[in-house]
Image 1 (cartoon, rainbow, N blue to C red):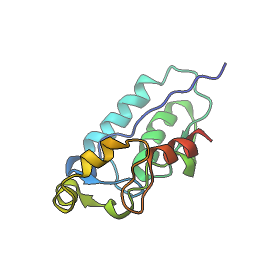
Image 2: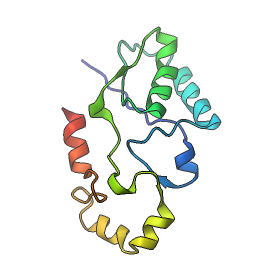
Image 3: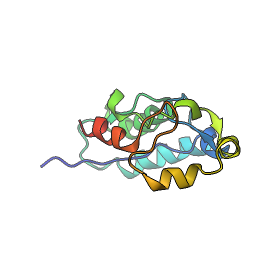
Image 4: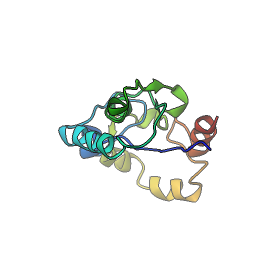
Length: 131
C-alpha cells in the first residue's frame, strides 16, 4: 500500500506581510526554514522513497529539508503548484479588499468555483494536482 504524506511549506515573507501569492517565488523566512527543518527531523525515521514538490522556491526549500535525511532529491512537479492568483499575485490583501470589499462574500458563495481575476479556481487546482 502506498502512503502519502502531505506537507505545507514553512512560513514566507508573503505570509507575514499578508501578500496574496500563489505562483510567485516567495522564499521561506528564517522561521520557515526552521519549520522545514523540524518537518524533516520529524519524518527522518519514516520509510520515504520519493518526494514530489511544487517547483516554487518555498515548497522546494521545505521538500529539500524533508528529503535530506533520506538522501533523496525532491522531484518538482508543476501539477503540485499552489493556485494561480492571477491579477492578485503579489498584491497586499488590504489593497485587494479596498478594490473589492465584497471579495470574501463572492468567494464564499462559490468556494470551489471562484477564482481571482485571471487566476485558478480551487476546483482547477484539485483536478490538476489529483492527476
